[in-house]
Image (cartoon, rainbow, N blue to C red):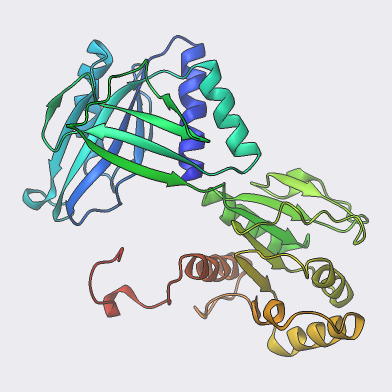
Length: 336
């Protein structure tokens, strides 16, 4: 969700600089089932452009239509969509549609939390019924202080409040610079992840070679800065060099990423671990047991693109504490 709100805030700001008004549609409540959970957003601009989605496609046209009155009056509203009587999902979604305007102060706060990887929250106020209300709206909480996404509104205790927490942008560190790194980088960036490619200093490649990369760094093993690797980070070791994998593994021994994968078959992983232990017998058992190798889920992947899907699927299953199963075999709701 964090990458989505980051993109929308930037789009709102750019539109403002061109004198274009925007309204934001947010799913704030749900009864029954829907394609996506509360917290998804869609941006509608007065020039007809839209960004994001609040469903799989069945609701967006109605949201655009309802947004026109908000663009004209600057008064927020709540709309509902009952999928039980349509061909969509079997639930009722409640959507807050509000005019938005970002001040320079609010923009600065967003830039700070994104760059410094600070968690933050939002509060959206609404009613469980269709209609307009000047007290509807969203505000963001940064270090205990609240900032309205619109031009201010008087919060009423009689309103419902949808609260959403935003973690730092999820990031992926890729150690390696070969063809499979390129494919994994592109696929991960498509998920909104911030991808950093770590290549050896002697690699004759530029950032442009890795489509979707946020950054390409080429430190030596001794100068590698591991401090940005936190619990909202996945790490993939995929250099195709036995010695480089060992040295990177040693350099990363004190990190605690959400996921740590090692590319290659089991016997290669064991060789890498044995060599690393030869260099540093004090490597913790906890660190070694957290390694996922061979990285990925068994989906019969053959190509670099398919291997990327396999690895990303495993990362998602780990960070969301899910056991991969076919959905047809899963009891209960899909999102439970």
